[in-house]
Length: 479
Image 1 (cartoon, rainbow, N blue to C red):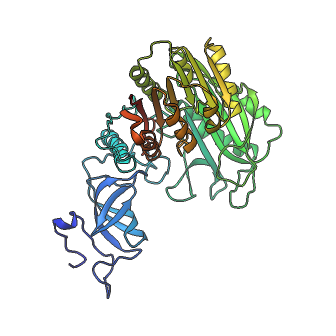
Image 2 (image 1 turned 90 degrees about the vertical axis):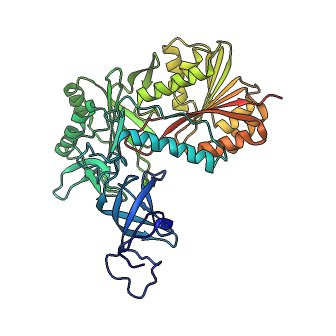
Image 3 (image 1 turned 120 degrees about the vertical axis):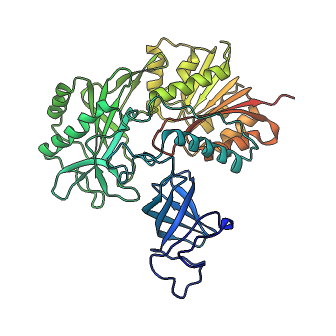
């Protein structure tokens, strides 16, 4: 078949056309820089479109299933390649116009060009595929994704790397897809719109103060990142500068920010002197106002600090919590263990409905906040322990009625899985932000018929991206 002919149906309706001539190559060969025609049929876990040229997979960012696209191959392997969209030949019915003018460049979102309805469908499919292929579950009980109340303007936290333009202007934004080239932003459609004025104006103030912006390659300069946080319910805001070294005499500027923005309640510095891609360092100082904002979540009031982990979509997190409460149908006398409890975001609402709760968390600062949050909300039937879950859980010496797992993206340590399989708590709720590690851990928990997977509820905490949150429910198999 020539480079411009269409393949037949046995070729999965995909086609190919060369930017140049094939020369002496056989028809099945391909090379970097070649241009091919690809029909996009799927999305991968990173949010890229997936198509085929003959029997080889091609991954193409910025595409949608249903697109027919002209694609330049930028990285070629024997059985797959990564491509760059050159021209849209036939748009998918699921393709929409992005709301952001730099959506095709900025790496903050992957899916602004995809209709929200299809985003939800794709996320459910991502969970199903992981449970079937990695978990080995046949027909896993995955519910439709809980849609977010709004697909834009939802983020309660945004952290922007800083840079300098060609004309020496301070910039803040996200890196261009697949690069370290900063895309300058003055507003962002996915963050809470009340934060937008700070994004534009704080850059100006940094410029006027003459604070040197950090240069990653040379490890020179001071100001590395601008972090903004807001209580969605209270409107209280925090502004944090991540710096290589402490900035002397910053208090005057910090006070000016507090005076200028009535909802801003605190300005902090976080020191990160390391040559690293990690954003926050280990030390944070409040230089004006309060070291925390107040936020209302599930009828409780929480103190949230600049470096506290707190779900970026408050309302979606509450919706998933309601599903957990409905599924557990708590009677008020249960013993609950919340592993990886953080500041008690889920522990405390659940503690109000059980007999006793225990939270386990490796970060001492988070446990201190959890204890303060419990006290301020008058919740006395909960205790918190500091340490690694894989060490604390086997030492508890109890068999809780319910274990809540909410680990980081890497999932649970194998010791945690083994401890749960030995203690056989009646129910396990596993909250996860990565379907692949969720599927792996659920497979281990259910091995040998010890537990049964009864329900998986995905929820959209991250609209316009490929990320999806899930709550999986396990019940002990009796007998």
